[in-house]
Figure 1: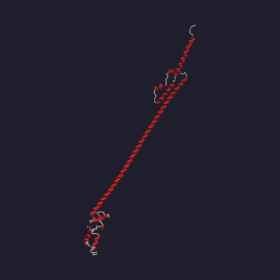
Figure 2 (figure 1 turned 45 degrees about the vertical axis):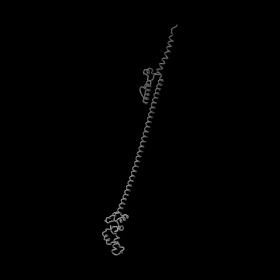
Figure 3 (figure 1 turned 180 degrees about the vertical axis):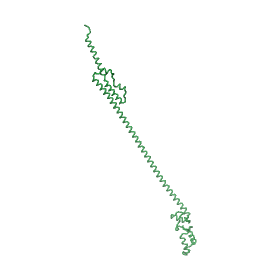
Figure 4 (figure 1 turned 120 degrees about the vertical axis):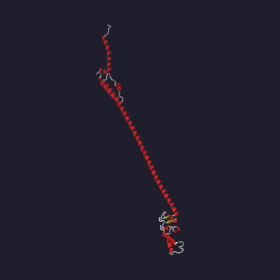
Length: 267
């Protein structure tokens, strides 16, 4: 009467085993990922890391869970919908990582290109400014050189004019001195005739240079120690021929005058 009931014990054991078995199956399904899906997710994750410049085997293995082959091969056909959902989620996550890495790299490349363009523009502007400054300095130097050369030419011309003026003044002074000496002492003509200071003064006043022949109408004649003039010769002949009165011939030696005139060359 008091012995165990096998049927009820069997039911209790069955109820205790079934939940455990269901939990085991659920965990197995959740953890299982087909080898092809894992490989695809790993490839996408590796591509994303490579684009970002930080791809390493360690990060790939830590990002994508690797299920041991024995675990995945134990249950090949349990809940295909869950397997596909997990695979698609893994692929989408890996694709998002790759897209973000590509976007980050594109942004970094654009920033680097913008910086390079800005540096190039600044360098070109600096070179242009230096070129403009050098050109302005060269033009200024050329203008100063031209101004200096023009000033030097003007100074040279002024010096030449001053020298010519000084030479002219010196020549005039020398001529005046020579004229003064000639007027004071007289001169001899190219014919050897003596020109008295009185006649020299008349000749110089008429523009005759010292040493030149003086015409008879300007000569002083015998009263100045020169040869007789043509007028004196005529008067001497008139006195000698009695054509003039004794008073008009007073102080005149007709013979001496006629003799001096014969020896005077007239020049």
